[in-house]
Picture 1: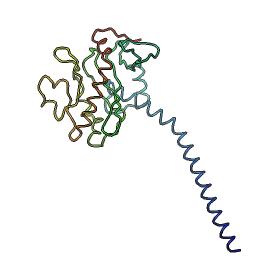
Picture 2: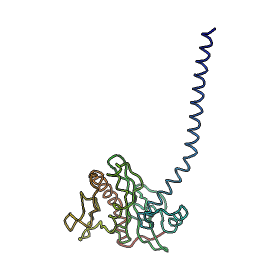
Picture 3: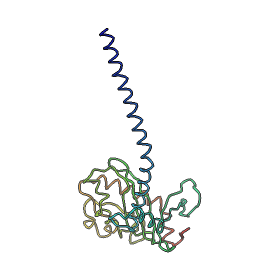
Picture 4: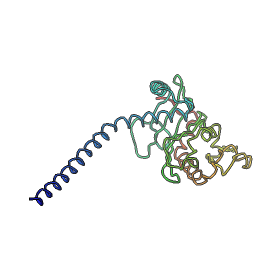
Length: 236
């Protein structure tokens, strides 16, 4: 009789544990599903913030959600361009995403998405240009996996501000990109200083990979930059 009682107790404990596991799993699943919409909305808002930040339309202090959406709707136009830099209405192979930033229908510049290798994972961000098609007006980081205090400094204000005013063309109007120096850009030869930003101490590889990714992106979007230099692009 005692053996049967012990077996029943063990059986009840196992059933209780299984039931508790099922209930916990259902709660976690329901929470994840319920939060997914909120997470997606927050990511979309953060994307807008980073685009506006790159375009120098907001500073480091984050405005309210209402102000962010109002600024974005008023000044940012998402477009698609083909491999020749022409704005198109429908997707075609090799088409590219682009963001105009404008004021009262006048294009003040454009923003390119950056998606490149980092030391520990992908670096995603935005690089903005003035409407001359060669002068950088801002840089921002949307996501990364770099080490805090080292490569993670790519999202800091001091690093991002370094990009403003840098040129992707040299004095002979040849494409040279913009990169991250090993140390201070001011220590480079004078003819290179306008094309590099200060590096991050202890994060040489992060700088190297980001430089390579920026150059690769700029080459891909070269036709867009040329179109801006020739004043061929118009808001839609």
